[in-house]
Length: 103
Image (cartoon, rainbow, N blue to C red; front, side, top):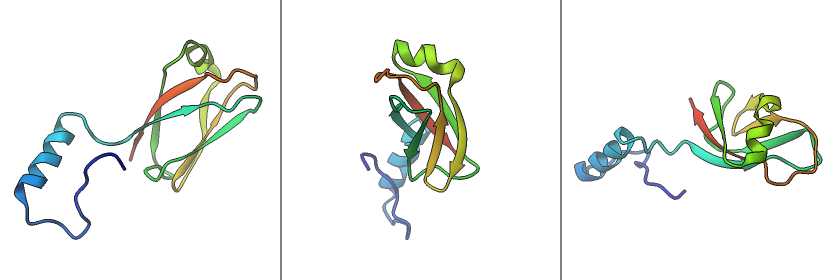
């Protein structure tokens, strides 16, 4: 992980807690990632430890080919630590999306 979290057992350091809470309040919720749709395939499986069966996955295209693919791209399955994107099957290798996992 490239971001700070609090230990599961808690901490006695109020500065550490304040720093992490400030980050959350500033929108740094550590719930984002990047995925490129698989070329010559109709689905792409994304492994992300934050994903779950009830998660909401938000997609944002970051390339022009991803923007063109957004109309035919959707989250077809959610599971513990993964989700599946269903999309058009073509040979493009630059259909890249940013995503956020909520919940």
